[in-house]
Image (cartoon, helix red, strand yellow):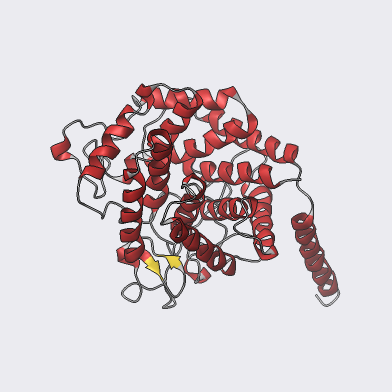
Length: 375
């Protein structure tokens, strides 16, 4: 045992040097594009049939569209186009507005629930690529009805900020209707007042998880990584679509920068983020979906001049290193994705086969932004 100890120590330091070298190694655009193709081809080849317009499927397609824009692979655009057509370019399909709801639900009456609106982002993107009013008719119908109501509490869970904020800005850019920006602010302010912790500069998943009524196993505030990933990525996807003279633009930029600082403070040395951000013991170990959203947001902030300090670049590269050296499997599968849920679950175990559509979408977002960053 004594003789083996120096060897163990040597191997430990060699591994640290290897990780550090990987993080410092320049990343080439072609290398990243090849990774995108490997991951997305694997997903599409193993998921050949169009699926529903639910949030998890639509979140994958938000990443697939970015992969298409980067690679120009027509198969990727066609994959999303066939999915949209299969869903009649709709989310939840009820036409009876008297029954439309926005609490949690998975049936066709939940038209106003953001989980059934994220698909509109993809429809807008497909419209921009090949304009046809049919592609956005339902999105316009639903969102204009929603904006005609006095309600402001549509985004009561943090996921909803990713699901719907970009819908508002994309439809604004298409229609130039200023009401989209007015309601974007109203809905965001409500969500912010409900879930943003002004001390930690992070978001709770929803009102059920606000401290102190809810605590981690160690009595700490419980910020769910994927939840904060949703809002961080959502902000990254809207800021450049806001007009320069938009009076509330500074609020969205401020929240983005505050989140970025808090997020990098929670990163593990191996590059990933644990499922409960400030209490790693709540659900320790690798997790890919939150890490991918954070890596995407950091890279976007760097690429667009909002995150200029080198500490953000260091954090983003560590995140990318985890995504490509741990999460990415030889087959192209993305592993260590926490399943559908709403919190960091104590005792939940993830492995290299733990994958999901939205996790792949998040990876594709990060990879597409890495192409723009790469030298």
